[in-house]
Image (cartoon, rainbow, N blue to C red; front, side, top):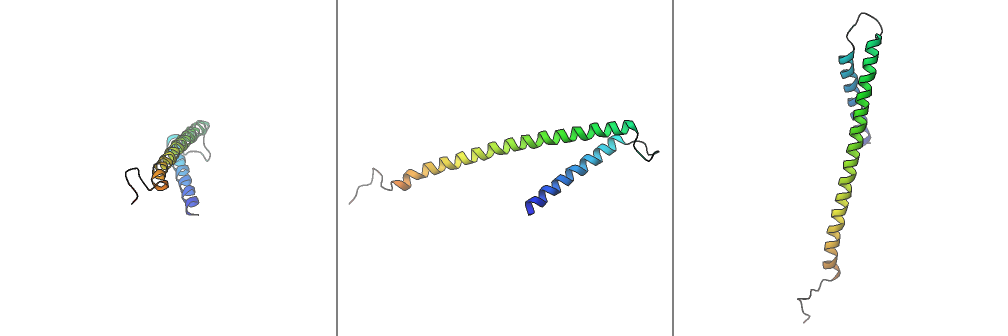
Length: 98
């Protein structure tokens, strides 16, 4: 449950950053109750850019994490393979039975 809450918090933080950034960039007149056409176009482009950027970032992060997980798994398997011969054959060639 804590992981889900953390993901949701991160989503909300990202959403709030996008809203604040695009509002500050695009909304410049407060003379009307609604946004004017230029402000709407600017806000649409701004949010689209941020969403595309975040999607690319998430995909790159997922790719990097997948590679790291594969590398860690390969290292663990290699360590396990290195330790297996000593466990399977505790008597070395140098040791002689008495």
